[in-house]
Image (cartoon, rainbow, N blue to C red; front, side):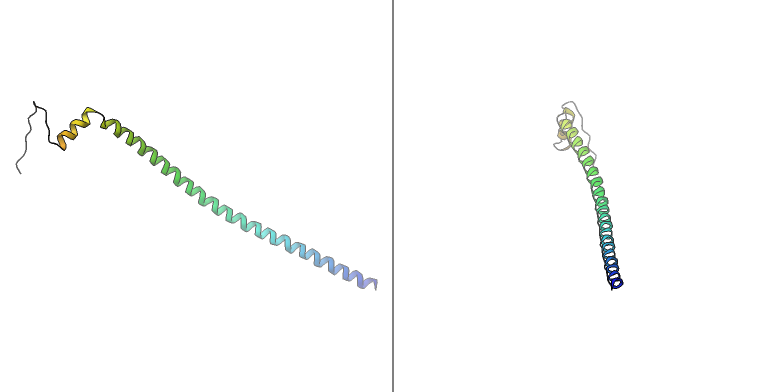
Length: 101
């Protein structure tokens, strides 16, 4: 009788060990899967960050260009160009030659 109970105890221990090993394996697989997903998300976020940094650089350059244009608009040279091109105005001492069409 003692051998039967020992065998039964050994079977229970083996079954318990197998259950523990199976649980640990499931946790490992789940952990590796989660790690893989996080690495993919991290890669996507890094690409998005690079794109946004490039966009920021473009917008900063655009802002500088607008500032320069604003300064240029305030100059006398700009006023003269607009008067000549759009309004057709000339200085009194200038002679304007037009070609025949």
